[in-house]
Image 1: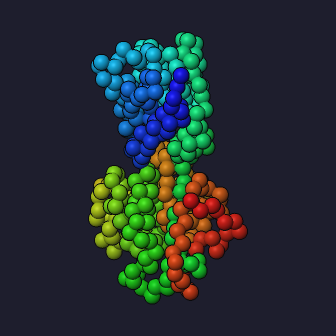
Image 2 (image 1 turned 60 degrees about the horizontal axis):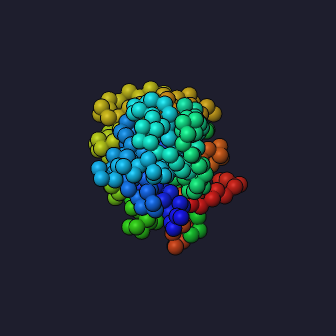
Length: 345
């Protein structure tokens, strides 16, 4: 008789999956544990795209003296095991080879090449498969992946900080004036964690000119995102712009999105893309992200850029920070232009 709740084992698998946060794109986050008589004898998670999947890593972690117990164990996995060959072999084949008789899956994989076929293959081979344990938590874990597959576009997070009275910056009389600081050191680390989680980060021309941002991940472990500057009115990228941080720090690629070709010569890590001017600019931008394999976008632009996404209802999460002080005047929050107030995460 089991003395330990199966939910605890699935929770462990979810926790393992989180260790690869920001590293697996375009693949999902997946964790797995192997349990024999209420004890975990193996565990693993998917580290990066192209590397072994969670189930394989879990099997490989089992100690030699415990391998005899694998056929009598239960495999807990946060996402349906794959049944197709991509960069790695099908996980269903490995599960059947190991002789596992019971698999507990948190969430069925909506990816068309899987989509329940992995579960069907295991069941057809006589494996007991249960689906739905901690499904809500598994959906939250892979919200980005689910948006990619089901909506066929990048997962979009809108992020900004504002004063208590609704301003995202104070009045600045020159570009040399520093932007208003809203975030504590702890909150700043969380912002850079968001940068690590996303494939790309976007700001508009005004933010580029006024703030001279780096847009890099400096306060969290891991990669920096692709840095994108969006200038639909071609007001940007003069000669003096070449001295900005974006063009002198090569830690991550830079994309310049404009409505007409640029004449300047940029460093090799800087790439420019020309999109149509006007109402189709936003859709063409999303199409470009899809084409280039960008699966998640963090929008840190000013009010106008954020308002564009809010008005188009083109976002999946909002990170809105409200500082405990007033500015009384300045650049209004993007919500000042919108009828609806998005949720605050």
